[in-house]
Image (cartoon, rainbow, N blue to C red; front, side, top):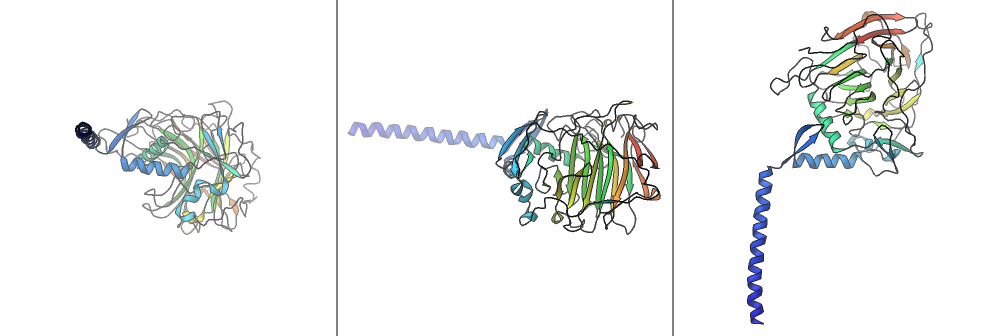
Length: 423
């Protein structure tokens, strides 16, 4: 027994030394990490602290709810079918007691006057891809979010700064450029906007994007409320995918701490059982060939005060609740219709629209047609030409031609160009 005691004592000492050595090794390893690690996203290294990583994991748990059904789409997205009443939107602190609205309580009324009566009936077929499988009734498809998606979206938001300005990195330009039309009138507010947007697939690199969009905005430059919607080619936003997709974006504080693209944060309430805010298009236009277009509308429901997203005039995709926007309850102060691009880190900006400068032909350059805005009473009116203001940068590479009202196209304009080094 005594021999056993001596042997056990020596064994205990040796074991204790091993434990101490392991603890020292662990501490040294942790200290050497400096509480950061690197993640490779689309070929670029991104440093994350432990705290940032934990925050991303928390966000993922909120966004990726346990699905009733999972659909793997033909274009590579994963759609989780989530109970419409338990979707991520309702994790927003302001929406804890929100009662879902399954359809608008009011619809827009198109005014038929001497200028608009001659507008032809446009093609109403929805040009978005549809999964072979659909979600069960009572659920909605939510695009599954990965950690890399959140990292890319954060980077994209941080780098979208003022036109023509330099980024912090030496010799790196991160610039945005527009080619479109602003519409505003002192003392007047707008309760929605709509247009048919010509759909193209402009060429972009991995750190560029190119969009055609409508934007509604209110408030001061540093704390504005904004909703944007349209189509985009944005590989940073969609995991390297360069197909043309629908998109939405919102913020309620000038993009300081609120808002996001699509459903990458709680806020937008989806009600449609098939289409998401980021669905890709089935077809895109070609220069001098077949032209495809999509009708986009966002308007304020007069009764419930929700901002509804509508495709092709009658497909209610979902809405932004009024609780999100303190400055949007009485309408928007400003509307923008047009192109919007971001240059890459080398300062070279991508194609906009068709990639060709406007030359007067609607099958050559990208176009907006039947632009209208909504009044408080629910009427859709044509904009007044004298209140239209060109919003155009980098005129060497991006053009804009506004034609006012045309009988077969309503209020319309051509825009876009090949891109290049603007700054």
